[in-house]
Image (cartoon, rainbow, N blue to C red; front, side):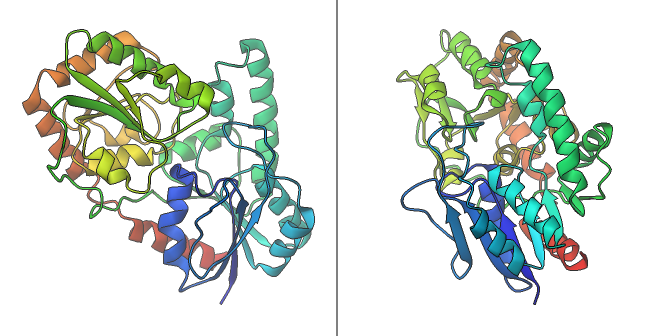
Length: 363
């Protein structure tokens, strides 16, 4: 049985899309690989996968892109890579770069599942001055090309992602493996507790998610409608302070996302950049109509007025109008939600895991 080292710069107790991807996929690979994990320690009490050796590295106190970088425990990473047959990266953070370095040194097979377009995250950061942003994007692209060139394979979630990587001049072989959805867990259940209509979002609170645009639209609408706004997720304190008022509920990272989604009448994804958008797929699986920017796999999955609606990036006025239409038309919401559930019916984590297993076995 081949030894598979899973390397991630994000881990529990954070439960963003990447961690939830691992949560679904890693247990499904146990019968085919001898798995070990190297990841950062992001809390005192950290959940791990039963029966899988997990090495957690200490982190610094400062943040880079909402997460603290791991300390340079070179000997630990070196030893883990040396024992592995395949190194499966999830990101190019501190741990990912250390693992890539030693994987090349020991001539190990290396692949990566690209969960995001790193250069776009830099480009969409409003805290960085525009002039400096262009320089940083150039540096990011140049380095990413080098990092990806040192991988044997890139796993991507969609054709849209593949096109983006090819446009950036990244020539490493690529394999499209779509994300899945647990349709038994994420399903319409009709158990909504509150009477007020609730709009919401699920995922990280981060600059590229552009929740400020959604917040502006919510403030426009609540003047004339009885509304609630729920953010199912977490983020840096500085960004959460923007929503510091009683009418906005921030749940933090929760293990039972599906129970919170059941409280939503409308799901909004205002992201400036996205690959697939796992949280959006899960909302659709729950039969919730989606209002989204025209990004990532949503370009293919959402059909206007069938299962969702698009709005222009950072356009709070247009978002206000799109949400108003859905708020005032219960039948339209119900029809779009039903169709949203139908749209994601072909997707499953079992299919995703099977494809990943085949790719890893062939490396």
